[in-house]
Image: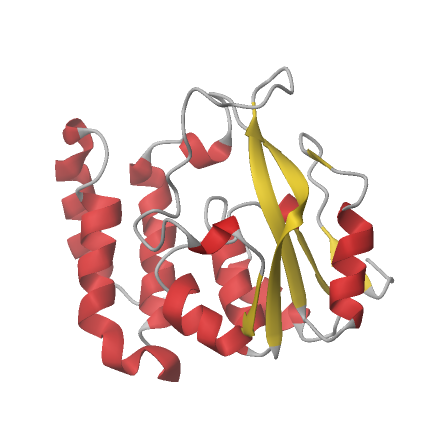
Length: 211
């Protein structure tokens, strides 16, 4: 329904710096297709979470997201976004409103845990440039009831669906073994030991299913 030039999915439990949209639109006007900012985690009361360091990016890089960068969108997908959802909060993103996004929405329809990741993969695979900024912040609320913290047994079917999508893309033909290892290491064997058996059964079952 959005009719503006750009789209910002401003999630109701998050907020941002007053400079966020000004910086985002300036970057997009200068040629980027997608802008995203640094995300600061906050708790239920809006206080920054400092006692529990955020290690989401560390298996990819411990330094890349400490400073601004601009990159070719397809290179970003191939080198980083294929491995995990580096754009880890939709509230931190502003992107161009174009008719092509409806194709991507059809693919992610019905996904509850990882649909944003698959959307960004599709969007950026067809885009020119992506930009990241540390000059403004999105504040990313987290608490025990958020969807992303639900049991991996429910989340992993969607993640495996994305990996199966990835290995069918020309950008990933040379990296199929790496993706398989990364999926099992990161999403199957990681987490509560009591769920490893369920995750293994799920993974093997999904590997032989079609989408």
